[in-house]
Length: 126
Image: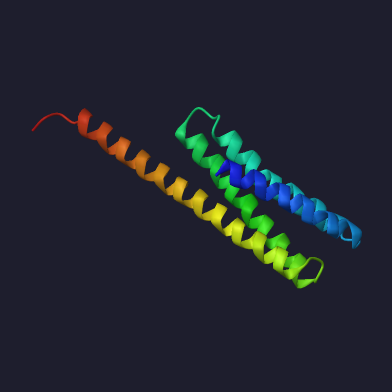
């Protein structure tokens, strides 16, 4: 997932160079920041000590993905970038979001299972 997010950010940066040429520098900067933030937050999540912190950082990455999608749509609507390139990036972004959601769901289920086991073990026998 991190590899996919990093390659996605690199492609967004390359495509954003076209925005710079079309006097849309602020949108290019926002798009580059938000796309890079997806990968950065996934990487940071993997280094945090607790499952709760890991999950929180993945939620932040998902928020960055949402922001990136919005910037891509704006660029497409304003006809600032080639439609096919934007659609390709939107599809890849959708895949990254699915991976993030699946991992977050798995973490939530694991945490719920662990909590259930702790409660079961701490209950006095009947």
